[in-house]
Length: 215
Image 1: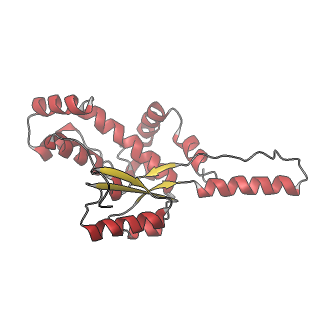
Image 2 (image 1 turned 180 degrees about the vertical axis):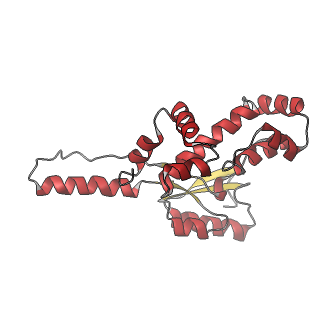
Image 3 (image 1 turned 90 degrees about the vertical axis):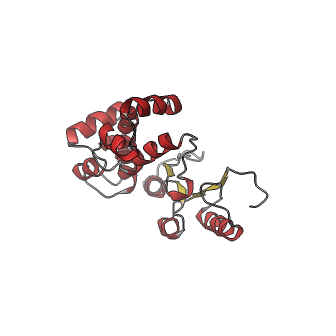
């Protein structure tokens, strides 16, 4: 760990190895994620949530893999001829927790504004809330934010809500009204409209893709 150039990111083969990497950083006095960001594989929720800082991990989509395996087994039982080629399924994505949650933004005010927006993604906030948090005029903050992030404060707020909703659809056993509420949308209709504009599909279709057993 000491020999690695910093800042850098480390991808571990699985969550247990990632846990050991975080422990090694702690023993070496290396800050995670500021100096070394650590990402695991498997999204073992127990390990990920017990790690300090909590561990970001790639979710391989175990539930979807199980459904595909069951479908294949059913076809074998029915005597169907199967394709002998391997079935490849993409991972569901990175489940972000604290071990990779670092904003590489030199402008501290912009970084604080972006961090505030992401931390409050479960609430219906507006630009005025961000301005109250960083205590800067709207004109100055908008100018600095757009220069660094290449988008406006409002664009950033609109961006994080669908991302949080997608995370909830992949991970949480919630009905659609609850997903909309916890992702900061004032109504389910608004949630469905914005989600489709951002991700190109409906919330229901998105959930079925990643969690075949849920509607």
